[in-house]
Length: 486
Image (tube, rainbow, N blue to C red; front, top):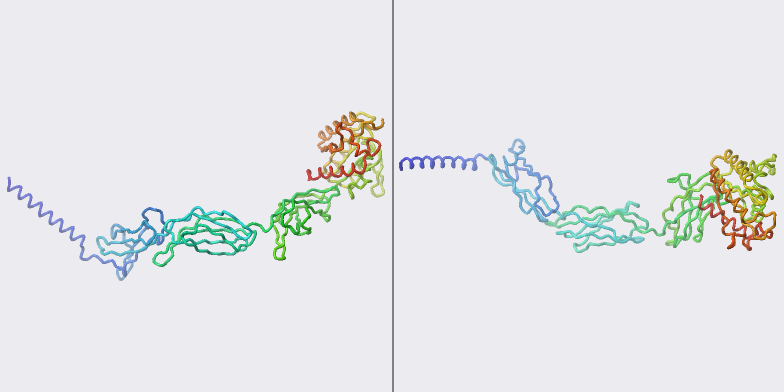
């Protein structure tokens, strides 16, 4: 039994030696080709990587030249790869070691650069400067900032020490938009290796002068009026006009720095325009302009005022100089519609026809003082409706504004309507306006005393007609309407 065991042990030992000799021979192949720096090319998928805190391992490709042709070797068959120093910022190494038919070690280096700069932001802006700050990056030996003034297509580069995390960029132009990016870098063996740029910071220097906030309306003499709020440092304002909201603006006028409005007297009636305003400041004896204001749409509306002796007084006192009137003492809704009181060319026409001849965009009508004292509302309102219908049919898109009868004094004569009667008529007129798709504008509140009668300071003498102050107030009330309904 002992002899058999000894034989078996001897056989196993021999087989083990033979097997070991075979594998030893395979790992130390005397015919294996030697990999060297001269016959071997190592290609890395990335020669520069960026720090993450993890081991970085670029893909490795190896070509071997046997003197006749370049052979693409197969990883883990012809060679294996080991990495060292591949976590921290600096130089890392990939070591290629031959396998099977190849032997020897060849190395290739790659570099780990800093991570991306985070937290970049603008913290202040001035007329010629922008201040930017950012977060520190571990392992950085400095920072590089690139600034692009996009409005003037100018570039600038700045370099900072690692303890600098904020910079005030000076020498910029006012009203300039800039794109700013920052990256960290590390000096490795005398050469700078850069991290990824931060997210872009877009910032603008302050304007030399603020842009105006513009508005506007068509005045009572059919001219567009552009208005704006005054701007600090303004030495003048420039007005521009276009028929397109987004382009084609051309200069039409300058005003002094104290002005807050401009009337476009050259605007064509019935035509709509867009207006912009620029404020200008003097710097080094030169005008520097703001950005343009918002575009303001204004139509040059042909405006006509219609009425009886009250409106005749507005015309006579020149409360609205240059306005268009269809007025007559004693005229009411019936005579306005039926009687030929007016001239158009050589023809005698009704008040309605005279209004239509103007081709108006807006018509203010005020009737009732002569009729309300004697009649009920029905007949007056009926002819009001006839007139409105004819004007609307002849003048497409016209804006008709019905005005109420103004208050009278408590002790006015018998032929003058009293407060109760006026209130009744005005309520009927308002209802009629809404029913017929036209506007109703009650301008009369400032004319009334605390009891609802015509205030003494506006009484023209007979308890219903106006004095000069009252006509001026009427003009102010109409301008108020025009501003609110441009």
